[in-house]
Length: 451
Ligand code: FAD
Image 1 (cartoon, rainbow, N blue to C red):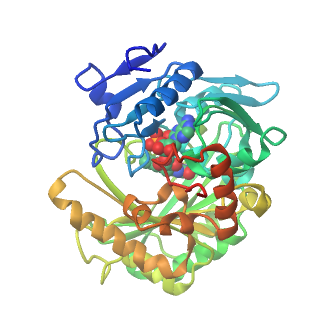
Image 2: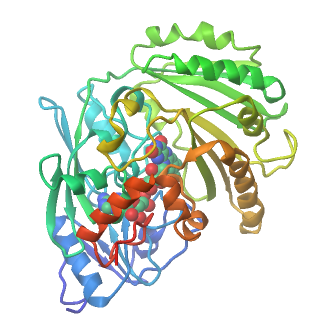
Image 3: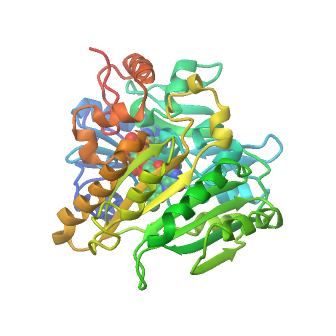
């Protein structure tokens, strides 16, 4: 088969074509790769044809949904990129409370379609992130403590395999594949449709943020941590540390999804944590909440981040969190922003064995991230984020597969071993061997098939 013999309902782009550069541009501006072919798939048949074409031409495959993977897995150098962005549709059945979401949809499309009926399901915190990559890795969001991770809410997947066949996976149909898809990333094929369960989450929220001077913050964060342990599921506790004009600030609070009046009952306890220097309490709609981080999480910056899951957060870890990898609180202009988001609640109701996702029982997810524009700063910025990550590593129980940095994945299988327990990695390997024995889908957090 030659390129010209393959017909697509969508578009086939080659270098120089209008739209080629836009299609290969992803969220992290450090990624600058040039695929030989880009298939902008219009439907399942195009995805099947693209997989077969790539295999016939022996081209590496990259799969693009929202393009947010920081390592840029979606864009294969000199390979074939399957660009799903034209497959961004969402159909909601409000009676059955189900959403059928095409494989290239962004979170904003899922949220908008669901909220039209007062419904929602767990989705991440930035609306221009892709449903595809986020859900396949697990999918954390403000509703997870009420309804589980995004992957816990997927009822079925439709997938194009490495052989170019269309298969479905659900609890009753291909259950091993279903298990693997719930946390195992893009290893098993191209998901053309996710079927999600939706919930009556309402449309209202409350966001509380209290700023404390970082130098006084260790006991404050200890009390915040203890309050988190008994917080209602509607509340997701948040913490971040960043530089400010008056010195480093620790911002502690929570995001509440549900009746804001109920959420406001938590405010006195947060206020009593210490002596805040500033505070903000807002009541955005759910859709506003979901777009709230869109500009700080925006495109066109160079990006690097390190992450960990933490099952406990002792005082020594709090001190390291506040230092952000520096020697003192305001050590360097390059110190990254660091943050925590609480897990628990419904995430932990799901039995450990139920899905490939391996880190139930997490107290907080930690992230250290930076963004910058000047390539000359690359090494210093990345080193600073790595130092912040290294400072928390002694307390880590693992890592979110979607937070793995490219260099961590390059270190043999260390990154993937941190993302999955040994038992789950063995089962993922068996599923990979069954569905993709030649490792056609390897531009991802790769599970290698057994030889
Ligand atoms: P892409 O780069 O398009 O895809 C990443 C990889 O996923 C692909 O290389 C492919 O292997 C696979 N993939 C994607 N779609 C498909 C598909 N349809 N079929 C098969 N494989 C597919 N994560 C959270 O859990 N919660 C958050 O709140 C959150 N917030 C974020 C905010 C920002 C600004 C960013 C950059 C990331 C955030 N993440 C969050 C991490 C996010 O889950 C990952 O970056 C994820 O890879 C993004 O998916 P994507 O579809 O946008 O990325």
